[in-house]
Amino acid sequence: MSPFGAALFSARLKAAPEDFIVEEIATEPASGQGEHLQLWVEKRGLATTDVVQRLCRWAKLAPVGIGYAGLKDKQAVTRQRFTLHLPKRVAPDLAALESEGLRVLEHSWHARKLPRGGLAGNAFTLTLRALRGPDGEAPGEALRVAIAARLQTIAARGLPNRFGVQRFGRFGDNVGQARRMFAGAKVGRETRSMLLSAARSALFNRVLDARIADGSWERAIDGEVFMLDGRRSVFGPEALTPDLEARIAAFDLHPTGPLWGRGALRTSGAAQALEAAVAADEDALCKGLEAAGLSQERRALRVRAEGLAWAWCEEDALELRFRLPPGSYATAVLGVLCGESGEGAGEGLPDGD
Image 1 (cartoon, rainbow, N blue to C red):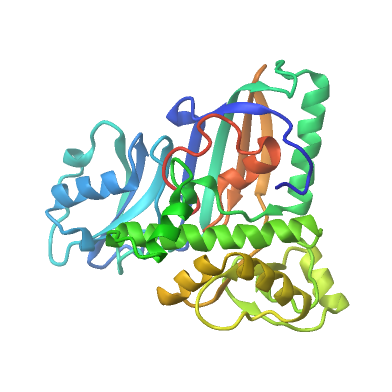
Image 2: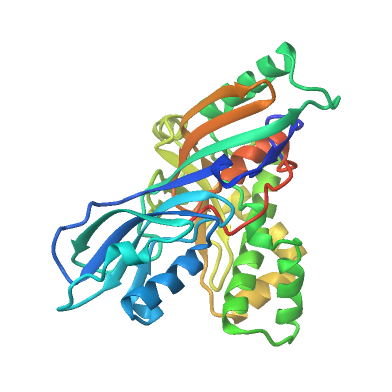
């Protein structure tokens, strides 16, 4: 569901890895000393887990000795950091690591292992090819004007912070598998973690859709809990004041939705009533997440695509550039433009870590 109207076009995403470029934004530079070798690498056509396996073989390390901030898409060109725990060891030959699809751009020593989530965000460059309007025709002047207007709206208002299609599996059946797991089906440890994330994400998206439907996804309602922009810190509920409204308008604060788990909803009033209604409709998912031991958390309903810029690189090819915070998905931008309908939009690993 989009608050900005119907999809404007369809397009081909990831026609080549270079059409989906992701660059990790570091929280801090390498310290220059320590027991962890930090590598800044560029990978093409490789999953993050593929790189981890190569690093383990190259440095003769177990996977526990490798640190990385998040998973990056396989069908893409991505640049991200890895750390390797090498106490009292000389770094192996970097030239021996480089191979097809993998280049080391920089290396330095660092004081600690890179933790999951240890990034400030991701910078994206997406190229949408074979773009066609609703009539199936190549973009003319009217469609180009409409696309520019939609992008200007996104830049000014932000966009719904939806979990992307990647969370729900290549065939979109992860939530169905989660239901079967909660009913007693046995799954492996890694699969269990993936299915729990999918169930949580589906519930959040349901709440987000309800907030889009009533127009409150970008504003506070009675009983709101707020999240500080760029941080996981939350506060509330508390009465809405002109100061809070001004901070929301300035993107300093965002309204939030639940990441389901044990414990009471933090919201009150109208916000809690809306979230409780979604929970009642998805009782099996909620109880399954609670039984799995997850605790209630919050996620911003709105996200800003910082530095959003665009250009027509061919008659029917549109290039988009923007930055997103950790945990937000490039497909959220596509969703308010082409409804995630572009072929290839859901391929690969999550782009939100």
